[in-house]
Amino acid sequence: MTAARRASEYGERQRWFQEVLREAGLQGALLSSPISVRYLTGFTSSNSMLFAGASGTELFTDPRYALQIESQAEADKKTVAGGVLLHAVAASLRRRRIRRLGFEAGHLTQEGYQQVDAALEGRVEMAPLGNDLALRRAVKSPLEIEAIRHAVAINSQAYERAMKRVKPGMLESELAAELDYQMRRLGAEAAAFDTIVASGAHSALPHARPRAVPIKANALLLVDMGAQARGYASDMTRMAWSGKPSRRAARLYGAVLRAQWEAIHAIRPGVTASSVDLAARRVLESEGLAKLFIHSTGHGLGLEIHEHPRIGKSEECKLQPGMVITVEPGVYVEGWGGIRIEDTVLVTGDGCEVLTPTGKELRVL
Ligand code: ZN
Ligand code: ZN
Image 1 (cartoon, protein in one colour):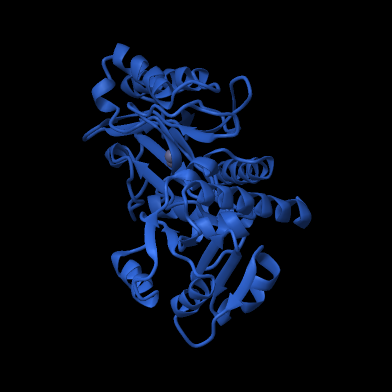
Image 2 (tube, rainbow, N blue to C red):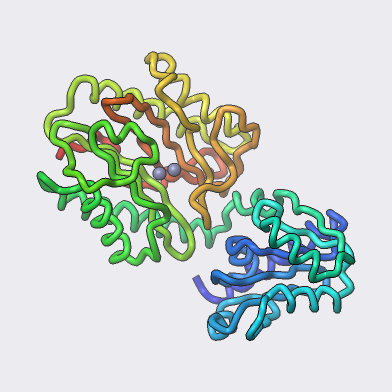
């Protein structure tokens, strides 16, 4: 991945965004979400604002990022010393004589909105942006797919390394720490989300937090983890059983695995997200387990762990080549435990490719 290839990708995205603004009758947009800023310019920081418009792309940050913005960002750069970014942004907007300005309604707070409005002395009409950025981000470029493959590889390798170290008496929190440590050692920037390690009945909580309690013997062990590398996320859930799996565990595991298999085989360009969800749901229904499947089948992922499209019951969005989604049906039995199997999957020209290489047997510890 060369710097030049990356740079041209940001330029392309900015030109596309200018076209979106033009069609919406906006002279520009003010972007404050770090993900949007990163997607359009490559710049990563906790404090930035991006003006994007027909008259140029101007990126504002504070002096802590002065060196970074020079080497990283693809835009006109403004480092604002000793003050609020907004004042510099407002001055620039006045200079450019902006009258209609788009903003991210899902991100800018009420307070932020009022500040922008006041700084522009009420002379600018503020219009919420549509979901064009989210829709475009759902379809990954070859460079983005490369980054996700890298995150997936780190994820799976870290899982193998950490699971070899599981021993009797190990705490859920210790295994979570080991998974995070191995991901970091393999080059991840961070975990893509808080690693989930849940044993026994605790695994019935889909978003369980690891506890400082020993991993139970003769019980389920659920690990849901993701790596973030080059900004992009992976997501995987695998199940293990310490000892010989009970008949109930084997039966439910088999059903969830079939549901996941059917959902994966339903993925191809042009099908709706809901039809993929339905494929998983039907299998669980036929086993009398539909009520135990309490979430949607998956979600898009990329710069964020949850992105468009949602793979759920009433999602009419059509899948396209280049989308990267998870497939993660599960069943949850209160007081006993939960079973979920999750892969990161790329939608290809004629079907899909499961990116996650980790085996899907119920692992026996
Ligand atoms: Zn997950
Ligand atoms: Zn997920």
